[in-house]
Image (cartoon, rainbow, N blue to C red; front, side, top):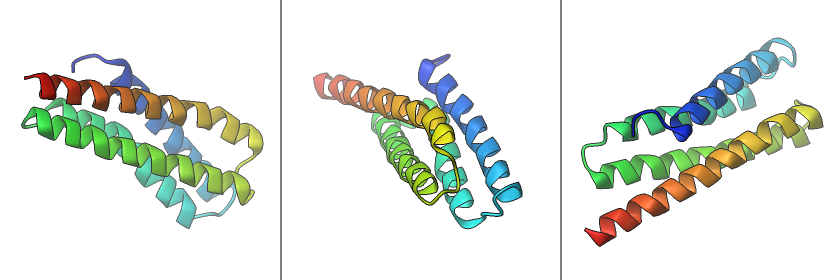
Length: 120
């Protein structure tokens, strides 16, 4: 996979999620939801990195599929944080496009990888 947009964007997103968790814990005194969004939001990049050295093409697809599920879960936690008033509409509006872009990239990557495996 090497240097990739998905790898870079998932890492940058993880950094933003770490900062969000710090804000939620320090400023909002919120500890449960913030840990959930931290776990799922940082797992995306970790799984992309794991996929990079997958044991097989099937393992690569599996890791990216799990990353896709984590991105979807992160989207859920961000919506819940917004709707419960822990983050502002502006904060949500800053993070939501990033997680949606990761979702699109992961969907495209999984589809492409599955096509390649199918054609072999």
